[in-house]
Amino acid sequence: MFADLGCVRVHYEDVGEGEPVVLIGGFGTSARFWSKAAASLSGFRVIAPDNRGVGETEYRGGFTVDDMADDVAALLDRLGICRAHVLGWSLGTHIGMSMALRHEARVRSLTLVAPFLKSPARSEYVVGTLTRMAYEGAVPVECLNVVMNAFCFTESEFRSLADSGRSMPVPRKPESPGGLMDQMAAALSSDMTGAASRIRVPTMVVHGDCDIMVEPQEGRRVADSISGCRFVLVEGAGHNIPFAAYRDRFMSFMRNEGR
Image (tube, rainbow, N blue to C red; front, side, top):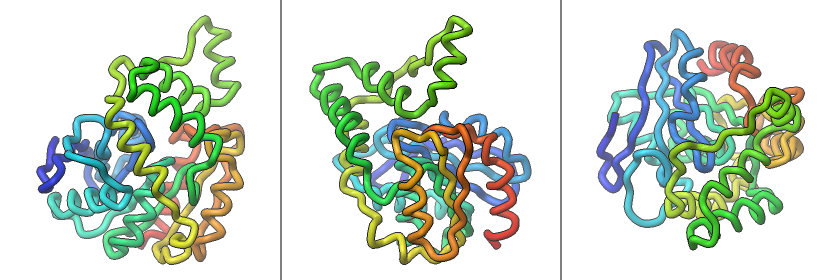
């Protein structure tokens, strides 16, 4: 489905019935990233937009994290939704935090999965460099996808695939290097170091203890910055934490705190 919101035409998925939950993806991930999560959230209405720069969302010019947060708020307006639970992953955590700061009344609860206050320098160096190289045509965008997999998944996940004679898949239809470059620019310009402490909505941080893209102490810093924030460390999980590993905690948090 699409929503024309003035300067942007947002593509989004909208499934289920019940209290609304918005799932916001990270760098380079479209609404497809949330297909398994959406299927397991019975009793909730799940809305997953394609952020600017990925999927089928159409936009013009550059943008910021705040622009993407405003897109989510405008989409909720279009759908007639006053308040929603918001879950963001990776870059999506900055969009979620911006939502909580700019549109506090719209956020019933906020869950931040693999968050950071400012882009980690090592990830910025590697992923940022490859994004620029893909945009300039120096390397195919598939090289960026391979590196993203290496940073997002754990050794045990790679070993399991290798032992079964398979390799980690990359997207059959890569995202546009131009869109990825725009997303990277938005990510690098976003710094929640001073702003996170102003978040007043019920918040939970979920982080994998084997995350090398955003190390666990980064998630702890986010949690420590937000008053009353819960911190959940998922054992054996990397940056791309399987939704099943924290689904029950997420459901309990929404039902008990996001009221």
